[in-house]
Length: 70
Image (cartoon, rainbow, N blue to C red; front, side, top):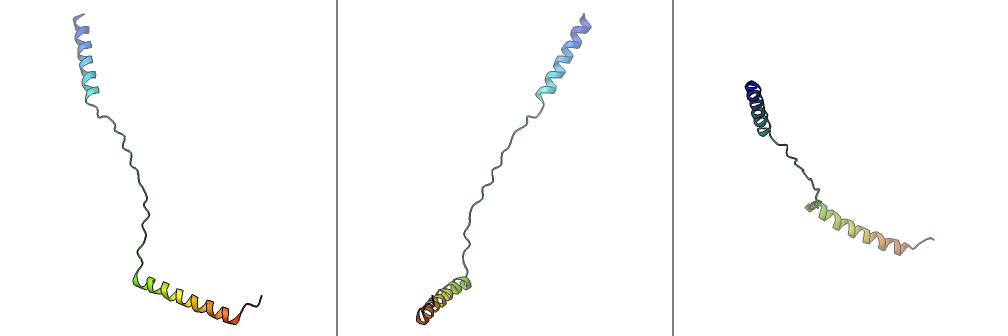
């Protein structure tokens, strides 16, 4: 009887220490958000847009001078 009591006490202590020393699993959630970043235009791009606007205005004037065939 004494051996069984000692064995069960030893087993209980072993299980208790074994369970208490385990590392808990932590869930980690990583959320990635995409942000829209407007690209800054360089000097050449700005100059090109201004030239395009001027050319488009001149083309429109030329079309008005020629007239529409339709």
